[in-house]
Amino acid sequence: MPKIVPKDELLKMKGWRSSPSDYFEIDQERIDRFAEVTEDRQFIHSDPERAAQTPFGGTIAHGFLTLSLLSRLVRDIYVIPEGTVMVVNYGLDKVRFIEPVPSGGRVRAHLEILDVVEKDRGRILVTSKVTIAIAGHDKPALIAESLVLFVTQ
Image 1 (cartoon, one colour):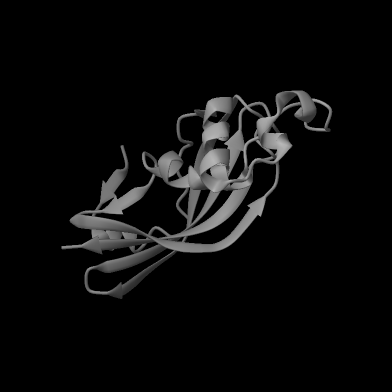
Image 2: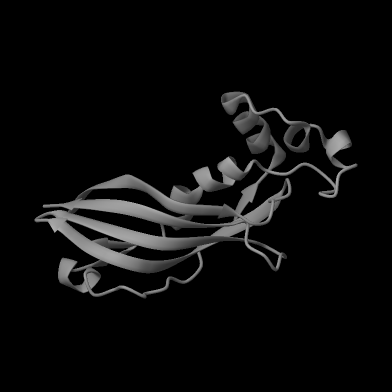
């Protein structure tokens, strides 16, 4: 469950860090479905035999698949102001793909609030650094600066 706080508290939470989310498995079926919908069928994602001959040793998730799971991964660790009626993905300022996620890999997110700005009454923009870690790996899958707009009553 996300942490619900008074708006005034959220406005002072720059620097706050979440606990990690639960792990989420990215299996080959999900990778194959993502390849179909995006028409990105590069063999490193969809051909286990050929991918086994690469330095990855097997198929890997698309970087954009991992990025697309950001909302899913942070939903239970985010901080939300009381009275929120809508949450809007406002964009990304920076994304770096650092380590590929192997098929069957488990990922989880950590979040740090970088900035909180009250755009106007009822709209709060939160910029967070989101790190998606891979179970058993030293390096994260990706690090992104995510912007989320909370619309409150």
